[in-house]
Amino acid sequence: MTLAKTYYQVKESKARVQVHQGGTRSGKTYSILTALIELCFHNRGQVVTIARKTFPALRASAMRDFFEILNREGIYNPDLHNKSEATYQLFGNLVEFISVDQPQKVRGRKRNVLFINEANELNLEDWRQLLFRTTGKILIDYNPSDEFHWIYDQVLTRDDVEFFQTTYKDNPFLEAQVVQEIERLREVDENFWRVYGLGERGTSRSTVFTHWKETTEIPEGYKLVNYGLDFGFTNDPTAVVACYSDGRGFLFDEKLFRTGLSNREIYQLCKEFGSVPVIADSSEPKSIHELHGYGMNVHPARKGPDSVRAGIQFLQSKPLLVTSSSANLIKELRNYKWREDKNGKVLNEPVDMFNHTLDAMRYAATFNQSNPNFGKYSIG
Image 1 (cartoon, one colour):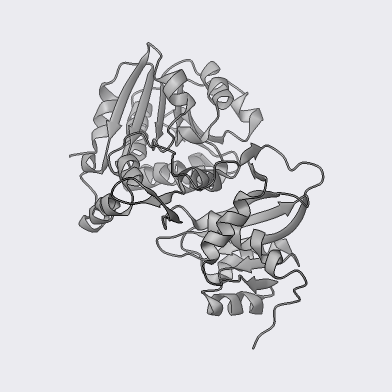
Image 2 (spheres, one colour):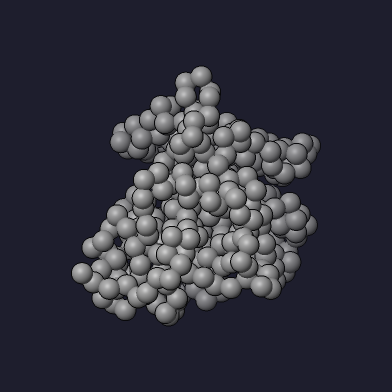
């Protein structure tokens, strides 16, 4: 049976720390999980930790793949799965899933093996705390979208590291349509192609938002204003972002980022918002009408001429904070770029990628600027 290249790299490496850098759909995560399951088959009494910055992101990526592999191999046993603790007893070993925004687990018990999925979402202190409590092998994977990162300075320079770089061409299971979409990045954006096509380190000269800062809590003085909602379904996720303001700047907190949601499911996940306004993508009036029918206080975003660029300029003029738990929002902030022409000249138009949470953010922040005295949404 032929597997993606990363699987064989994991199996053959003798290094304590393995760094798997790669483009999109290179099979890194799935291959690492397959190799870790095999490691458990050949060992007993090990603690294997699989970590990511936030638990929702972990659940939708590495955790989902892990249980898909177990089901595919016919070895999943619900009696061994403690869903409330996010652990699984595999061949006499404990596999635990933790998010780095759970300090009690990061600074908790020791582990034998550590796998950090999308490691560039973490900060240096997150890495150190996990490293200090791991006695054996450590594996990390990531897309190299950052030009500068602690991974390059603090990890790749170690003498116990082995570095691997893979691309979509190293994954034999990709459908032709997926390959075509990836290769279209050559024409879409040179930097996206370098990062997500070739698996090489990105550059940040055309990044749209550069002045935002992370915060671990909502500072005093910030009040909840509204929520922004960007619709998605099959390929694009539905994204919801909470918008806070102190009267000068904004703070954003990611609340939802998931594909395959019906309007009814969106309402169920957001009904805890109560009467706080939700500002939704106005290009889907039918969805807005349906959500309103369920009882959501939803309003269509205003989209006038050049509204995207105007909204960007408005946000660039304000102090911006983002909660550290907003993994997808942070990823999009790092990846949202201005388009470049064939000569590398930066154009005054953003690339239409990595903008789901950012569109939701823009809808929320700009709504009251053009609607200072808005009322309840009404039909007709």
